[in-house]
Length: 502
Image (cartoon, rainbow, N blue to C red; front, side, top):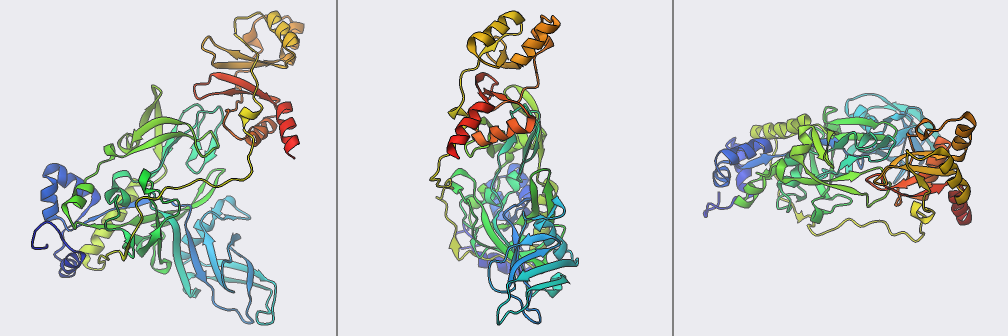
């Protein structure tokens, strides 16, 4: 520790690591120490705090160099275990993207699984084609390879270690399948991801010790931070990292291929970063608790960037297994593994204590003031609100003959059934009314459809059009988050607008 007793240097800590004298705690242990004593005591006693996270990182991949075949080939397209991989560079350099899906297994197998299989030492099948040139005459190749056959096998994740995630819900009437997994209709479940108080970027939110060149735990091996991750937005506590490491040295325990039902494939990545206690401010930051980390509850049924929100929730509540939304208790589950995040941080602690892992000072700090921007769009797309018109409505206690008269006078084919608060109860068509009158039925409850497919005003019209076709229906009531009826769209309205655009 420096002479003033208030600061340390990474060099001083590394000397202690080499001598076996460094005091290392996991992030979980550090928080307990601060609570049982104080930040000042913890700073004096602790040299390094290890963090960890283990979750699906879709923006992951691996760069491989195959070596030249005989005769050589300049690869144009390539597949590994029937997963098409990218050919971004020279003749035999390939990039395996975690989200690329198999042409045969569909959602069940993808690039993340290929990487995990290679890391595990498994043999995989390579197919490649080329156009054929004077110096690269071969036009196809088919072989099997393992990681030992590769010149380079480098894990390269351009967005990793998300600082925090949204809590995802679905207020629509249908099940939806997203990168936040399966979301049940009408707020019947919620999902989230992230390690919360164990996350590296939550323990050093100002990037005092994390930057270009920081040595990290990555996939069961050692890796490095090589810059800010894509969509790095630290101002809103949504920072990300770009990382790399030698995948030949990694473990399939900490790199696992994954598939999300009706969404696609990904890869779970274990990542941990040691936070050196250079000053008392860092000691205080590593004492952060889940109760202090808030995230938005976001409605994923709206397929737009700015989705509706139901307020905020803490990671403490998320980890409890249930949260409250609009007075309703909702079951919540995690898509990441807290158990594995703890194992990452404890394994990194063991490496440091054994002297096999030393710390590095970043040669460049990461930006702390950037904001993730939306795509620039030069062509506008129509939304449901573009064709929505007022709905003709009724209540369940009205006489069927009165409703039939309304259909005629208003020249409509659909009547939306609402309650006294204007919320959706059901829908009836002109055909329903005609049949009811022919059969002598008088109660609306006997003929109305209760399982109503709906639309929201801010969703793309194309999405609503697909819903109409998928369920073979001709109209969608338009509702808000509270299920109040705002209007209605019909297949005829959609066809007219989309037809004009085409």
